Image 1 (cartoon, rainbow, N blue to C red):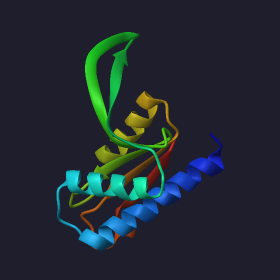
Image 2: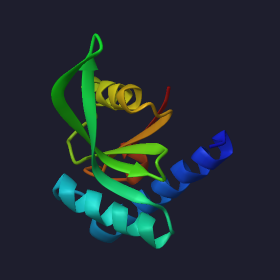
Image 3: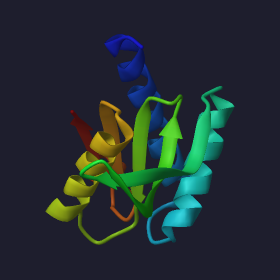
Image 4: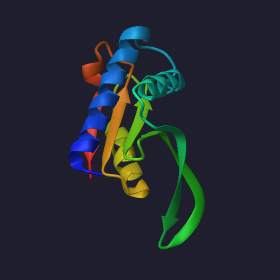
Length: 126
């Protein structure tokens, strides 16, 4: 997929995040935001996979451990949903690790527990 297409997906995800935050506000569980965001994206005709399993390998060996991506949009953009007081460096590191493990280039970390959604958006590119 072309970079412009991935940027367009990211743009839609961010727009939908604003819409969800405006409609229901901060302070709810991550699962509420995840489901609401998935619904908004599906309304815009995006393919949204929730709780996508990512296997973990070490030194070529399957560790029989699985991490779950909150959302994978159009099989290109990873979205990690948070509802925390503050985004910490470990949250950003987690997103980068998910990008690497899943072989994806672009990820969004969205924290809905903020006064304004613009304060809760982190975009990372590998």
